[in-house]
Length: 204
Image 1: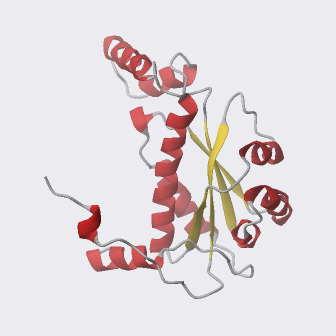
Image 2 (image 1 turned 120 degrees about the vertical axis):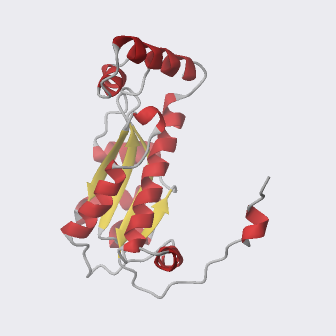
């Protein structure tokens, strides 16, 4: 994809508020989006992100009242709820040790990484830190979707506790951080407003 195509995709992307309920994203396209989520970077390479992909109409309708009754919740083709795996991301968890073991490090090097990880988390909230990783994953999914001509909308307006309850999520192990909807727009794209680059960037 050349530079013009990349910018075209980013100009295509917008926060789609109403999707065409008659159009469903094909498995091949959505699996590509999911694969890019899998390949997304995470801090320390911990991969403490889980995605709940919801296509069932009834489940979307149950979630809608707890997502400010936003139309994109139940009009989209695929609704994705992102959680951060708070229990696994704790410094002394088996998950963390396994992620470092996966790298084929020497015992000395692995222990050095584990020490650094523990020190890093001394003054960090696991949920807040883990949630940042889900946003990286979501951002990559939104970008790839636009390259495939698929619309999307990131969603922060929801009642976290109620969404977790509807999905039966065990909050001692993971917590919802953000939601995104994917599908095809029903209406024409509205005008977007963005700052000029010179107002956003400073070269030092």
